Image 1 (cartoon, rainbow, N blue to C red):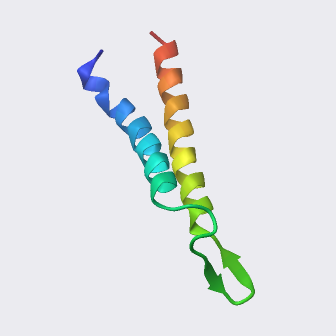
Image 2: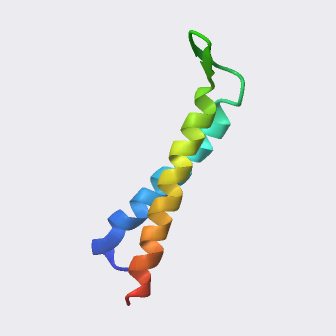
Length: 68
Protein backbone atom coordinates (compact mmCIF):
# COMPACT_ATOMS: atom_id res chain seq x y z
CA UNK A 1 0.00 0.00 0.00
CA UNK A 2 1.28 3.42 -0.94
CA UNK A 3 1.05 5.51 2.23
CA UNK A 4 1.27 8.72 0.20
CA UNK A 5 -2.12 7.88 -1.34
CA UNK A 6 -3.92 7.14 1.90
CA UNK A 7 -6.19 10.15 1.35
CA UNK A 8 -7.91 8.27 -1.49
CA UNK A 9 -9.11 5.61 0.95
CA UNK A 10 -10.08 8.26 3.49
CA UNK A 11 -12.90 9.53 1.29
CA UNK A 12 -14.30 6.01 0.85
CA UNK A 13 -14.15 5.50 4.62
CA UNK A 14 -16.00 8.77 5.26
CA UNK A 15 -18.80 7.63 2.95
CA UNK A 16 -19.10 4.17 4.48
CA UNK A 17 -18.93 5.40 8.09
CA UNK A 18 -21.46 8.12 7.32
CA UNK A 19 -23.88 5.57 5.85
CA UNK A 20 -23.47 3.20 8.78
CA UNK A 21 -23.95 5.93 11.39
CA UNK A 22 -26.96 7.39 9.58
CA UNK A 23 -28.70 4.02 9.46
CA UNK A 24 -27.70 3.13 13.03
CA UNK A 25 -28.75 6.42 14.63
CA UNK A 26 -31.95 7.24 12.78
CA UNK A 27 -34.47 5.61 10.51
CA UNK A 28 -36.80 6.73 7.76
CA UNK A 29 -39.81 8.62 8.99
CA UNK A 30 -38.50 9.39 12.49
CA UNK A 31 -37.94 13.07 11.78
CA UNK A 32 -39.40 15.36 9.17
CA UNK A 33 -38.94 18.98 8.23
CA UNK A 34 -41.89 20.91 6.87
CA UNK A 35 -41.74 24.14 4.90
CA UNK A 36 -45.25 25.03 3.84
CA UNK A 37 -46.75 22.17 1.84
CA UNK A 38 -43.35 20.49 1.38
CA UNK A 39 -42.12 17.84 3.80
CA UNK A 40 -38.60 16.45 3.79
CA UNK A 41 -37.24 13.43 5.59
CA UNK A 42 -33.57 14.19 6.40
CA UNK A 43 -32.78 10.45 6.56
CA UNK A 44 -33.04 10.06 2.80
CA UNK A 45 -31.04 13.23 2.19
CA UNK A 46 -28.20 12.00 4.44
CA UNK A 47 -28.22 8.51 2.91
CA UNK A 48 -28.15 10.01 -0.58
CA UNK A 49 -25.26 12.35 0.21
CA UNK A 50 -23.12 9.72 1.94
CA UNK A 51 -23.95 7.20 -0.76
CA UNK A 52 -22.85 9.69 -3.41
CA UNK A 53 -19.57 10.37 -1.57
CA UNK A 54 -18.91 6.65 -1.21
CA UNK A 55 -19.66 5.80 -4.85
CA UNK A 56 -17.86 8.82 -6.27
CA UNK A 57 -14.69 8.24 -4.25
CA UNK A 58 -14.73 4.49 -4.96
CA UNK A 59 -15.03 5.21 -8.69
CA UNK A 60 -12.19 7.72 -8.48
CA UNK A 61 -10.07 5.16 -6.61
CA UNK A 62 -10.92 2.49 -9.20
CA UNK A 63 -9.84 4.79 -12.07
CA UNK A 64 -6.58 5.72 -10.36
CA UNK A 65 -5.72 2.03 -9.86
CA UNK A 66 -6.36 1.31 -13.56
CA UNK A 67 -3.41 3.46 -14.61
CA UNK A 68 -0.88 1.39 -12.67
